[in-house]
Length: 411
Image (cartoon, rainbow, N blue to C red; front, side, top):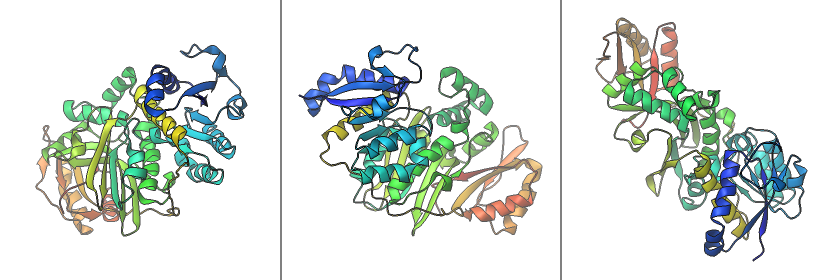
């Protein structure tokens, strides 16, 4: 059987994981799928760094990979937006197929990369760009084609889920858990992309685009991180039967698209509430399929390599490459969503906060609950608009107020 030539762009942990998987599973892939691969060239930044791949495959010249006529599939493992996006576009324009895990490059250059694939009949495969080994991309583009997806809500960043899980179960501070996560390698030395929600925003841009068949630019995703979440507010939320997560939430309501990433309380009996540590999960609601959840390891070299090799096999077997149907671009997402809100403040300041909320016709749905130190108290509102909440909280600016949105509460 003729081997299909592939080239790597990058060879860090994920690239090495893909190479290892192709080496160890070659026989099974050949037997079960009827395809065989040969890694011909690997682009790396430094030729001197030790890697568990043959030295003769390495090159520091991109054209050795991109312009090799014997390479028909490019596997991209580079970090960041550039030069990854330009390399992918170049490969597609030259009739090659691209397999990638790069959510940042895809989210920030979606239209031009997709248009290059469409114009030159190239294949574009990116299952690993969102949630690692969890097959949510394929579900949205293939398995759920008969559905009108109304909402996608998920834990799509493992680092923040680990931090919030520890804060919930142990009452530990954000800073302390972050330090532990960095020591364990679950958080980067500079954790900004994760803890400020940017990583999740890239992924939600891709998910919402596929779910609603309209391109949702990452700039249109409302993004708020977890750095301001306090352990006491997490504990107060638990008194209302709520569990905190950093969620990516996308909804299509009568053609109006919401796309937002922020700390969110969900009822403890909701399926997402039980997803802990560095695991990912995406909760999808379709008009025909109803509610379903996709759960698994969303990061790591081997889970991500698993998704990449699956895409590689699919690309190699495809007689015609399928690309997602995206009708247009969302120029402005709906920033004035409706939600229940958890509001916490110093006990003596709660009446003033309630007064500000009532001035904007935001109702109070629960009795006030007091924290263990008897200094901080919290309550839940009725369903209210984001604009009304922001106006009300603007009237008490300067107070130590914790506001966390609540999803999936009964109307």
